[in-house]
Amino acid sequence: MPPTLARVTDVAHSLWPLGGAEGWDAPGLIVGDPAAEVRAIHLAVDAVLDTVDEAIDVDAQLLLVHHPLLLRGVTSVAEDGYKGAVVARLIRGGVALIAAHTNADIVADGTSAVLAERLGLTESRPIVQSAGDASLGLGRVGYLAQPTTLGDLARRLADVLPATAQGIRGAGEFSAPVRRIALCAGAGDSLLTHPDVASADVYITSDLRHHPASEARENARIAQGPALLDISHWAAEWLWLDVAADALRAALPEVTVTVSELRTDPWDFALV
Image 1 (cartoon, one colour):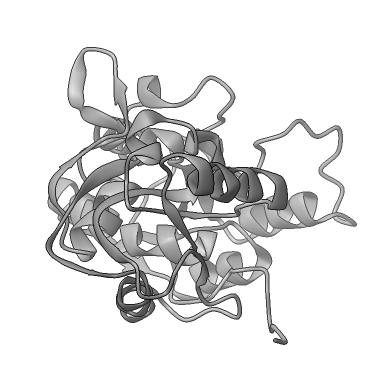
Image 2 (cartoon, helix red, strand yellow):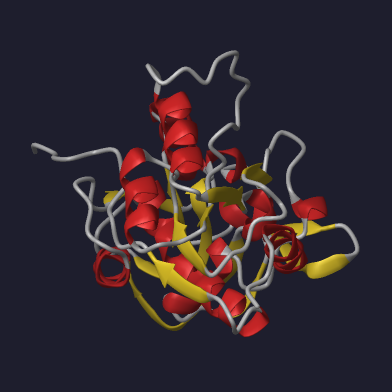
């Protein structure tokens, strides 16, 4: 017999405990009847109209995403707006919605850990450690098995990540040697001043804004500081979906689990 949504939600919360989420975050069950049966789960980074339609097309009863749909407060779910249209389409299609966000970032096989593993980092550990367990936390810092250059590391990232219009932006000397790597999948400019980031050869993250990036690079000219590699937010976190899918398959062998390959990065082209 297929598990109920309540059972699947419990499993999701055991894999990605809600207690690990940041205080501003809004993960967990967003849409759905806890008593409904779940025979198939579809995974995506974002709950957008295309991924909802894809979940319906593959006959999934649950769309599990990384980014919460209702992260910021809304006063209407009317269908003339994006969030209301998504909620309505989910309900009409019989598809529930669960988000695992910062609670999925901090775990041992979370978003940053997966990126670190794909880059082959050794001695990898969190940048911001969780209270009570040093193996859990935000971001990762570690070492490449062999030194490389900033440019070659950027090329390695391009091989690891799915292609996007943004590509990979770099700040620093293309031929500079790098070995100690700090990274944070998703938006990580809040960690730019952390000692583990400041002492790394390069910091890899997403959504770097002008002023924090400029300040970091100017500080590096005067004192110590990392080169920067800015990667697509969606691409960095998409890598985690396969790992999450495997965890769900192991915990719920009676449920079919699929992963979306739709690009939900918001940018369609770039001119240089």
